[in-house]
Image 1: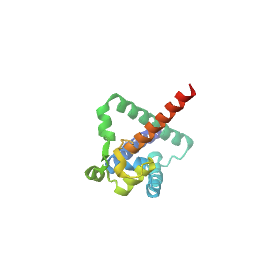
Image 2 (image 1 turned 180 degrees about the horizontal axis):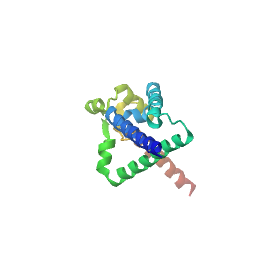
Image 3 (image 1 turned 30 degrees about the vertical axis):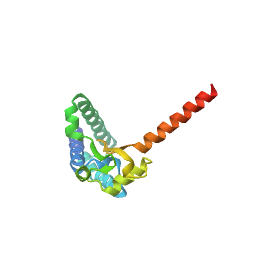
Image 4 (image 1 turned 60 degrees about the vertical axis):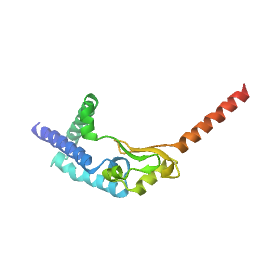
Length: 170
């Protein structure tokens, strides 16, 4: 029983360490994984496995580690929901990267996101150029949200087309 409590304690300690490390190193790691980031995450998971279960590589040792991770994750999400200020401390807040077609370079530097990465995110959202973006925001989960005039124009054109077809079919 004592060895399972040690596994649970070690697993919780590793969980908290990884959350703090990701928070310190930046949120872009979460949503924009490069090959280097993926390899890093795989190696981290492999390196902390022994710290969690130690010499106990049995099924019950693995289940004790997994159970403690599920429980601490549930508790952590509950606390983030219950105490929004804790969420800001742990997850940070969103950060505007583009406003009315201009990159906010200071915020890009804070987020450690290059102009090339911002341009890539813009294109992934179907917008041709940064100049066409009204607002781009680095969300707390690491995704970049894009709102653009170009998108609004396309959407309004589609709506007008649908309303014309609806009127002509009546």
